[in-house]
Image (tube, rainbow over all chains, first blue to last red; front, top):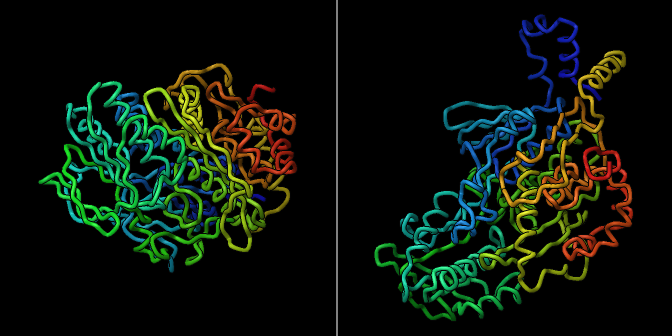
Length: 418
Length: 129
């Protein structure tokens, strides 16, 4: 299989490049498939890298990302206890541009017109695509309007995480900290439990102060690694309140109202961190690609089941897989391979696999982990656990897991952004 | 589009000259670093070249799922194992004493691991060159 880009390179080498460039129609633009990716997080960046690493000159790849660099939510709970800084977790798009020859445009998407296979950006630019990959992450469903610089979510990394860090580090002896956990599914299932542990450990063992830590969980129980997190909650004296649905947040009185067992209660706290319920990003809804809160896809390729030639990967897609950075990277490779096979008129790989792994810090020197492998089910068009028995998790938190956490994240970050 | 075999052959020859490494990957060092730097790759210099055409490789499709933990193309940037060049993957994964690797292995069939090994054995740059 060869395409015009190769012929163009060949002609250039023969000294005919000028002739081609004078041609009124660019052969490359006319015939090289253009893959446009919206979003440069774990899903989008991985997809762009692998499309070019595997597809090379046979595809043109453009990433639309509103930020000029990416700040990882993975490890961001370690910013709260000063084990990391957001600068440590910031990744540039230079390798995508320079090593992989991906066109990165730091602008915001304004609309998708699937009938003409084009998108438009906020500055009015229109871009044609052959395949569109949407990797826009999550959006929040706030209970009511309030100032998120006072009551943070800190569930997208960057300024929000630093705001929460400052609030936590300014807590004093006798203060109260309340955080809320959204209804599943949400980004990073262990993340909120991990956050509660990291903060409680920091207050108790680093600052040596007594702060009441209250966790309101909309779920009826800890949803992952229950035994490990429960043990830590007990050790730190965290007041865990299951089935507690946040109903109103007030940033002037610093109170949070919630409903538990049909009883409405209000808590006052010195610092409140509300992780709101989540849904696919706004562009998914605007383009009519959602069913309920998420975007349905066939996970053999992550193509939308609503609109041809649009693929959705990462947290916005609606398969039964968890939503997190590691598995977003995993989905992106399946998607990249499928797109390359499609544009080259090849049969899709029939049995793609994905995997999930997550290390969770629970103090300044201990972590837990869990992992799973998923198989494609051609009947449901969804992924399912590759093994009928439960995948083992780490169980007890340990310092060796803590050290391994940085080896895991080091290779994951590199595989995504380098 | 249609292209003559003659052009195709020439294109591939030129590609072979331009891209010296058949698998597109080489690395100066991949086994000795152990720090926990998250976004610092100064300790490894992986050179990746992109191909001129797409070639299907089912083993690579499956094996790319190892990269989250073992590095792109199986070349780890830290002290976790590089698996590029691995030619005894089937034995290795089942002898493994690492709990998270054992957990992963529950999700793969032997034929899938063999397929990954077939691809990995062609990749340069790991510990097993």
